Image (cartoon, rainbow, N blue to C red; front, side, top):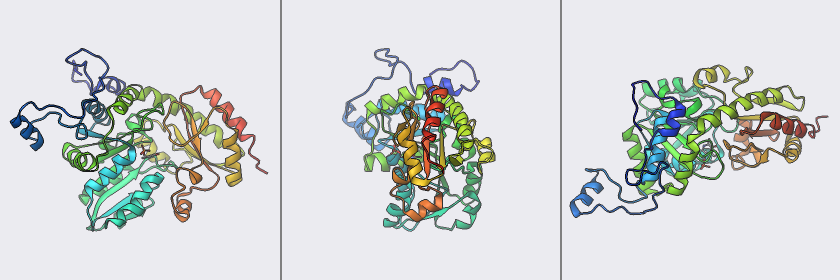
Length: 398
Ligand SMILES: Cc1ncc(COP(=O)(O)O)c(C=O)c1O
């Protein structure tokens, strides 16, 4: 990508062009899928230099791959980071990041609510390797939880599934004063709505399976940070754990990224309308959407998000039976986990995404039996509103 002025490129331009240029050997405009598992270094000395890191160049697809590198370049540009590394899934990205940065005897603090899989890593996996993970409900409790052993602070914002907002600038300020590395899971917001690195966060992680791919047909993960941190994470996550992204998936994710700003804007605008509809409906007790002034994180969300996103959760009167009646009545919105797709998706977190989280922790987070999570897609909003309204009419609220 060549630019003709010092004016910074807009996010739509970056989504289309960053990380990619026509293939020098064929002129192919779309990045070719490079299927080779090994890349010839030609002669003995070049091989030795590449393996020692003295000279650049591809060697082996688990370490780095040209198609995957195009995705990494695009993601680094979109997040405003120096470097990026892609993984086979969001969980591979998260585990590789955490395990590259902590050792036995260290402590990690996670702020707010987390996706069930990440929650399992924090509460069950890390303690088995001598890493203590401490949960705090919000940034207000962060300072008191820090000890000389704290190495990492991890937060999702907006979080899954409660849409809680963590003040990233405040988190970064506290962490920097103690020289602690901060990691933000930006899956829900995407760089279109929040850029954690510009707020002082050190590392951004993504489930690329969600908005980045955007079409529900590719699984992947990405980490964006400074060069030194990325090399450390690449070393552990790819060279050692081997959780590399397939170039086929990378190609789908690159294609998805080209329309990311358009999709996120369209879905966010629809979500704002649907959140208001739900908020006024008698079958709904509470809507968790950062765009609503009643949301406890609204003021922070207004500061750190350019729109409020496509995700929301809401509590139905009547608990699990009401959630079942609502979800089973949907005709256009699909019952499925995952999120950030072109298609609107809805699920019941207590029995799906967060079913492996211990019941007392689920309760503490507010993941009740009546809670439904909705990922708004890019369909016509009037059609979504009609489907949701007719499904709500089947919820018995007496
Ligand atoms: C916020 C968040 N982070 C990470 C993940 C894990 O990503 P993946 O399913 O791609 O491994 C998910 C999955 O739902 C998620 O919602």
